[in-house]
Image (tube, rainbow, N blue to C red; front, side, top):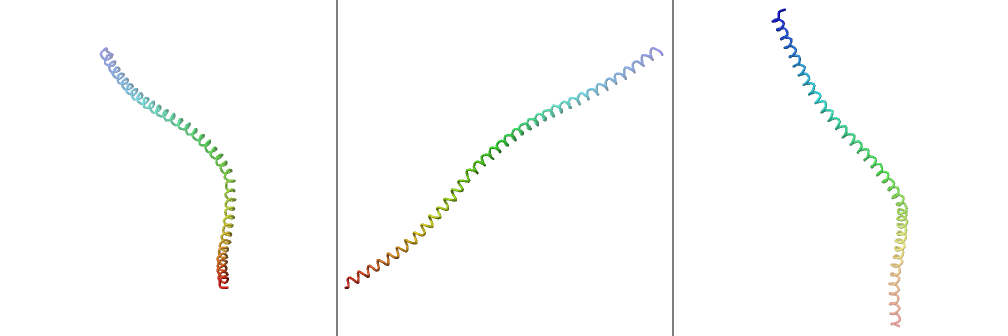
Length: 136
């Protein structure tokens, strides 16, 4: 092969190698962009995971607090219910005593009304007796 042919062959090989390098560079640029995108997605996912972990911790804490509050509420309710029993009994007794007193008052009013009638009759008899004395 002549030196011209060798030079032409070398020039073609350089051109092919340059095209291959350009293709490889373009592929590398595409891969770098993909890596950048995936890195950004990973950062977003990591932030989401951190937020979810924080939310889970907060919810767990709130659940524990709610459980404590519920236990305290149940204890308070039991105490109030225990204190309510004597009060209910007291109301029942006092309601009964009120009824007894109301019944006594009603009976006394009946006696009072009867006495008032008797008094009216007695006053009438007194008047009649006085009239009889006055006529005699």
